[in-house]
Structure formats: structure tokens, C-alpha cells
Image (cartoon, rainbow, N blue to C red; front, top):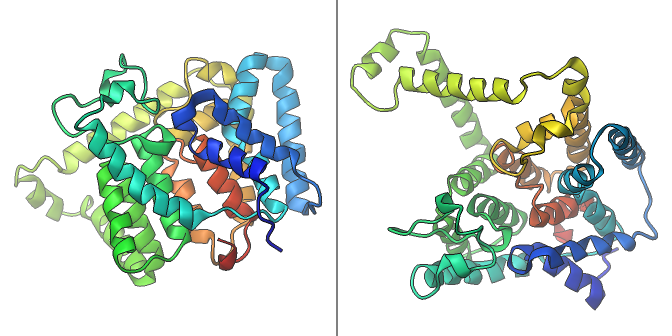
Length: 339
């Protein structure tokens, strides 16, 4: 049975989803977790909740309490919304998506004409100059406070509903308005996941591409003098592996298992979202989290859930507040008509 939100809880969800525009007030959305009566906990729910309590208590004795609470809210805050939506509450995904189809281009127009992005509440401090493009197109940061996060969540929303005609093409156009590689990759992933044949062809292409590195054909390609060649790709792979090794420098076997919050004291919300999660809470937590999320997937929700998980390899899509709300909603839904 679908329960429609009382005005107060409806308000909490909206300020959480659009928290980038209103700052700390968005944290009020976690009050939705107070409305958890009439919930039947499955075995997996009970095991995951007990696991969360266990790792919180363990870290309580070995980590800084402020760092523990802030990171726990960041990485596991979705559980509040999962439990809330599990009570049968509906969330107007299609209405939100249609609203964003209007708001995102409007923001893009304003920040590239009359309004300075430095004055926008959903943009970082002006000192973070890498986020601003003073001599070209300025990307909208929208409801997620980050173009990569917002565009990926937008595609997740798009995967949850059926649009036809001009609305569908307008939504695709909005992904390009974000001008984010993450959003475009999420859109490509959505297309592949919805088209089984395309998905199979994509993997054949990937395997064939990898195979080229072990044949003489790659030498011919390298001789063309293109920027993207085997040496460049090998350099990128080695560079990323070196970055990962630096992140885990000094880790013990226990640190790999349960993480080390001290290792992310300087920050944990940028690139390599899953990497920072591993540093914070270890492989054991990652395994439990992914299994718990996928255990809630149905035939109708597996595509948006996969996009959510895979897009988080770059920026922390499912850990930002709007992403937590959508993740919790997807995990609680069982049938497409609920979405």
C-alpha cells in the first residue's frame, strides 16, 4: 500500500533533495527517520542494522567522535530514507524530474549571463577556482551542489520513469547542459542496460580493445601519432594505481578490513568515492553495503541501482544527500508502479 506524505514529511524530503541551495537546513530531512512505525524488518535489514551498530561502536573507541558521526552520516545516512520509504511512502519522482528539466537550463542560462556563480548558494567557495570557468561555459551545479553528482542523479531519475516525445528529448538535452562526463557516462550506461544487445556489443568491444594490446595491431595504431595510444593508456593505468597505493600507504591488515577514519581526516568527498569509503570503513563494510543494496533490487529497479553504484566510482553520488534519498527510495520499492 502506498502512503502519501503528510505535508511536514513531504517538506523534509524536499529540503533534503534541494539541500545544495539551502545549506545545513537540508539536514532536517533526516527527521523522516522518526516515522518508522509499522515497518517489517527482513532478515537482511536486521543483519545490516546490527552491522552498522557494531562498526559504529568499534569506531567509537578508536576514532574521533566528530569524524565518526560526520562520516557515518555521509556514508550510511541513506538508511534513514530507506526505512522511511519502507513504511509505504511514495516520492513524486516524475514531478521532480520534470521540475529539473526546467530548473537546470534556467540555472545554466542565469550563471552564464546575469548572475555570478560565485554568488550562488549551490557553488563552492570562490577560492576553489577549479570549479569556475570565467572564460567559457559555466556548468550548472544544481540540486546536488556538484555537476557530476547532479547529472548522475538526474540520469538515475530518468531511468526510473517513462517519458515520451519532447519530454524525453528535453531530459537528454539537460544531461548535456550539465556538461559532465559522469552524466554522459551514466546516460550511455542507461542506454546499454536498457538494450541487452548493445550491452553485449559493448563488452565485446571492450574485450577486443584489451586484446589489441597483446597483438601487433596496436603497433600500427601507435604509429598514427594519436594522443590516445597504448603508451598513454598504460601511463594512465599506472598513474591511477600509484594514486591508489599512496592512499593505502601504511595500512595494516586490520585497516584494510575495517578501515581507518584517521586516513580521511583531511577530506573524503571528492574523486574516488569508493576508494575513500574503503579507506574509511574497509572492505568488510563495502561488501556488506553492496550486498545489502543489491539484495533489494527487483527487475524494475536493478537498472537505476546499477547506475547509482557505478556512477559512485567517480564522485560520491549515492552519498550526497539527494543521492541518499533516491537510493533509499529505490531500495524500498518493489514494483515499477510505485516509482
